Every structure is written in C-alpha cells, then in structure tokens.
Image: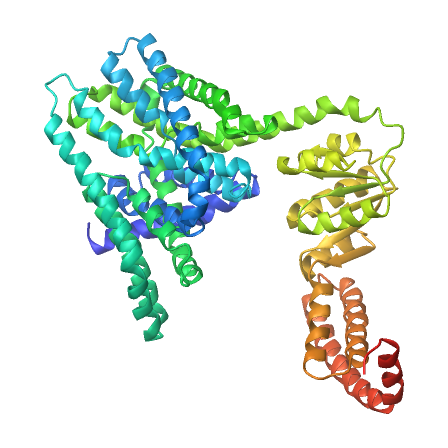
Length: 605
C-alpha cells in the first residue's frame, strides 16, 4: 500500500466516522452502530476502501487497549472475588450456547464436526461491542456489567482450547503432538506475561517518569501493552487476554492513572476503527445472492443464543428485569469467530461455503446489537405499563416527581424522604428500583421523556416535577413535554452548565440550579478562610458573588441569542463585579467590629 493510498484511506475512515457516528448518536442508536454504518458505506456499498484485512490487524489493537484499561481497574484481589462469575458463569454460557447451536446446526444437515466448530465459534461474543455498549449505558460497574464481563473474560481464556480443538475435528488424522506443543506455548506465554508485568513494568515506567517527558512515558506505555499482546499472539493466544493480565498486574501501581490517561485516546480511536472494519467486512453480494438463507441463519442463531443466555442468567444472579438485557449484550457473534473460521478452513474442518456465510452472519449479528438494546428498552417500558394498575391502588398520590436518580437526584429525593414528602422517581437504572421501593418511593423504569410514563407517574395530579436528568438534550425534551402537556405542573430543574441554564430559563423554568455552582461557592469560601480571611468576610464575599452572578445570568437570559450583546454584557458584568469587590474590601475593613462580634457568636476566637 503506497503513501497516497494510506492517506486516502485514513481520510475516508475519519470522514465516514465524523458523519455517521453523530447521526447515530442523535438517533439514540449508539456510537457502535454509527461506526458499523460508516464501514458499510465506505466499504461494500461505495467501494472507497477495499482492503479490510489490512486495517483489521491495526483495528484489533483497540480491543487490546480496551482490555488493558479494564484490567487497570481490577486488582488481583477484586479479580479473585469475581472467580465464580468468571469460571462458573463463563463455563455455563459456553456449554449451553454451544449445545444449543450444535443441535441447531445438526438440524440443518451439517456434519457433526462442522456443526461443533461453528457452534463453538458462534457461542463466543464480541468483547468490543459488549463493553462499548455497557460503557455508553453506564453499566460496566453495575452487577449486570460484572456478570457480562465475567463471561467475556472466560471466553478469552477458552481461546487456546478452542483453537487446539479445531484441527482435531478435521477429517484427516489428528496432530496431537502439535496441539500439545501449542498448549505448552500458551502456558509459557501466560507465565512470561505475569513475570514481565510483576517485575519489569514498574522499573520501565520509573525510567520513563524520571525523564520528565510525557511522550516518552506514552511510548513506553504503548510498547508495554503492544509488546505483551504480540507475545500472546505468537503463542496462538488472545492478544486481549494478555493485555488484560498486564492491566491487572499494574492495577495497584502508582502509575495506573497516568497509564489510563495516556492509553485512553488511542483506545477510543482504534475501537472506532475496529467497528468500521467490521462494517467493511459485511459481504452484501453474498447477502443479495442468498438473502433467505443468510437471514434465516441469523434469526436462528440469535434466537438460540438469546435463549441459552436467558436460561443461565438466574444462575449468575442477574435480576429478573435485566435478564433480557444480559442476553442481548452477549447475543452477537464475536471477533474471535473470524479466527476460528480461518483455522477451520486451513484445516479443512469447515467447507469454504460455510465459512463465508457464517462470517457474514457474525458481522450482521454485531450490527444487530444496538437494535436488540432498543428492543430491551421497549420490553422494560411494557413491564412498567403492566405495573401501573398496582401502583394506582395507593390512596394518596405523590406530590413530587423526580426525573433522574443520579448523584443529583438522589440528594433531592433523600431530603424529601427525610421531610416525610412522598416522591415518584423516573429512572432507567434497574439496580435502583428495588432499593427505592423498600423506602416507599414509587419507581418507574424507563425514559422520563415518554408521555405515557409521565401520565402513569401522576404528572397530571402532582404539584412539582424535579428535572434532574443528566443528559442535557433529554432534560430539555422533558421540559418541552411538561410545558405542553402538563402546564399546571410546577418545575424546578438542574442545569449542567450556563448554556443549559439559558435553555431552561428560555422555556419558562423559574427555578434552575447549576449542579456545581453552590458547591464551588462553598469551596471558594473555605479557600478564603484557609488563606486567613475571617469567616464572616468569606461568607459576605461569597454571598455577594452569588447575588451578582445570578443577576447577570438573568439579564443575559433575555439576550441569549444575541451573541454580541451577550458578550458585551458579560464584560460589563465582570467590570462591575471588580468594582463591587473593591467596595466590599473597604466596607469590610470599616465593619471589623461587626465581623468580630459575628465570630464570637459562632464560638470562634
């Protein structure tokens, strides 16, 4: 590939991602589907980039870096606590999915060897897609996320046995000595990674840190991760597994945060490139030639795997409302299936026509994941609808509706609860539901911007809505719906920033609190006291700053769309604030006696 071709391909990758990903995110389809669509457009549809195999090798490094960052969050003690989820849950998933898919393949008339190979490959899931989807939904650290991660980790551990088994299923005689040699190489590679991670990485990072050059530290970080991945690859193991082990061994290191910071930008870019490469690998010509066969296999594969995953979810202690979500996160085929199919083809264990169709089915199943997530959301919404009749039995409705139960909404809800005020909570985090119900809250799982959900929550009878939604666009959408459909319902809202504040005030929300403003003022007041200012003076200064800031924001609200006027008023406001501070200093010096009396009242000397 010449330099011109490489530059052209890079422009195509970036251009397609910049166009497709924001559109997919805007439509709430997730970034993964955006990248997959970008790959489909520049690859099989328009033919702008043709060499998908060249880019796939580089793109897979995104998965490697992702597993390294995940490993940094799990020290060996925490990993040991997950042993039941990893080994019991992972084994259950692999056995149940393989059994169901093998029976399905046999029913289609495949030879038992080919059926077993296909089932083993298809039983594995995409670490990249599952982890990225959970990250977008903030599920990675929840109990559901731990169960999904445990299964994915076991699948990586199963890489060596599966690769070793495939040639043994070929029609010709087995190569047992060769397979035993591969197994020995794999064990040696794992021991080498553990040794390097435990004894060599810290000295290397110390040397890099002492240079004081950020780029040297970044280079050594990448060398560490990619070098370990290459060792695992040469041994025939999963590169991602090696990177994960390295991350776990460095989880307790003093360089953990620096490593995360340096690796994160590369991880995000290469992960996007990986999804683009998957989209490029979809063979639309094969889909057009055999549409019924491909779609039938896709539906059958997804149905069997979803059923197997749903069946084992109780054994992993997945809550009932989340079992379909658990199954959907792991239902797609994985990137490792491409490797298994390649080994099977080289060993003549899988006919080439099977390989092409099954590869297409895996790629399509990856693209189907975002839609399965939307399907899960619909199921959750229907379950909410099924609960409305029971909720209506209560003799006294809640006076307050709280939309969003994150860090901000929780504080509001706890204060209301302590004041004996009933509240209904709208949130999309299932882990909170049972806890809130135990404390007497009426809880609805789902999107707070849905009109039917608001009606079920009693928006027509409630006195107040607390809009504490974290997402700015959803917050504004909820405000518009309430203003149109429930004009008598009073609303107070949380603003993420000044722009959000202006948008809410423009929509007629009278009480808007910026989420960090009051805590920042309190911090500034403490800073003044620590620097020697009397507490009375610090309090007066912070109160004056608050009044002035709110006054300025209210004035700027009326000129929000006039940028020139807004900037002019902001500059004038800063000058007025400076002058006010000068007057404050003079006044506080004259009021020293008053300040001293206030200090005595507070018990300070």
